[in-house]
Image (cartoon, rainbow, N blue to C red; front, side):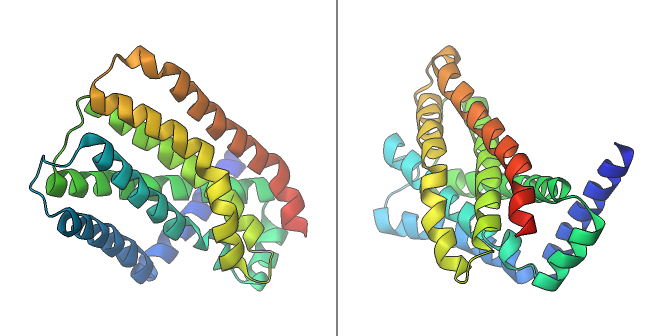
Length: 224
């Protein structure tokens, strides 16, 4: 157990070091968030607080969706075949997929919270239950990271991974996105939190199922 934790820590440290060395990817995602928010502000030509809550919420999750795809699509696609073969001789595939999911979860949490802060500052914050909305962001970050990491692993085995990643991403995260929209809409309206328990349970179940499927199926994908 201690050895597995040490190996996962080393893998996550490697991911952070690679991201820090290739800061153009992270800078590009931050620029995308800032640019998308600014374009929304210019397109609606509105002052803070004048955008309807439904439109506000929809635009925010659209930005989060494409941020997640751009951030996580490179998880396995950027890995060279020789490096993957080297990993295969050192560590179990389960630890590899879990370390990728954990790293992408941390990355998505940072981008989601930063995006929410910038978005709320520029376009106003109509959310009446902010803690519930932030909890929705956390659940969404875990779901996006788990689903898109597995999809990235599948796409990396194809001849055209970018196209396959785009095709598989939306069906994989559409049920999750629908539940997140419902919970965030309840947080916007300030409804009782018990009205969101069913949707939150569904999101948690989706997250657990995707992580479990990744744990079980990724070794077969890795061997191919």
